[in-house]
Amino acid sequence: MAQRPPSAAVLVLHGGRETGTEPPPPGLLNLPGTRMRPFARAVDRAARATGGNVLVTQVRYGHRGWNGDRAHPFHDAVAALDALREEAGDELPVVLLGHSMGARAALRAAGHPLVRGVVGLAPWCPPGDPVTQLAGRDIVLVHSNRDRMTSPQATQSLTARARRAGARTCMVTVRGGDHAMIRRASAWHRLTTGLVTGLLGSGSLPGPVGEALALPPTAEATEGTLDLDLDLDPGPDPGRFRARTRA
Image (cartoon, rainbow, N blue to C red; front, side):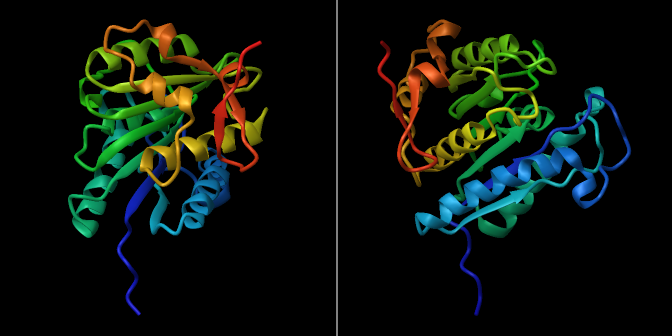
């Protein structure tokens, strides 16, 4: 029996290095790729629970590093999106889920016609990176306040720049987390699942996230920044968050 074509897709982009032209190691030896497997599984389970036919797959990289102007992972992401477009058509909604370097690639590739939104985890957001390609997209970036590998301040700045360029943006701070998302792992997984399914329309976004995405282009960076522990409250169903009432 022929498989049904997907109704939506999530492309997962793992982290990497600033430089490195060799290919990533295979299988479990690719530690950044292995780190994203629990996220992919959680999103896949949540999507299946809704009855939707959502394709969740990792983007394969040809090189371990970003490599300056060559921006190898960005081109790998675009190639994966082009292949998906050829297979499933022009109307397939896609959310890009990236970590660190993979989040940078996702943000750069978000101008592709299939992309509806980006969820970036501990993203690498250099100040000079473009944002015009994010216009009309939903962008939610999640960063630990204790990240020592990539800058949460740079992430907050990018959300403001992207909003001024026409994107709908939000940042969520995970207090006490880390770049590898090992500390408070369950919170990272639940939040990410809720965000991805919410952007796909197969779930509901947390109210404060929806409100932040609706902010006007002139809003300050701090207005679109939420605190996981102060603004969002895990509901009884994993992957669902609701507004938390501040004391």
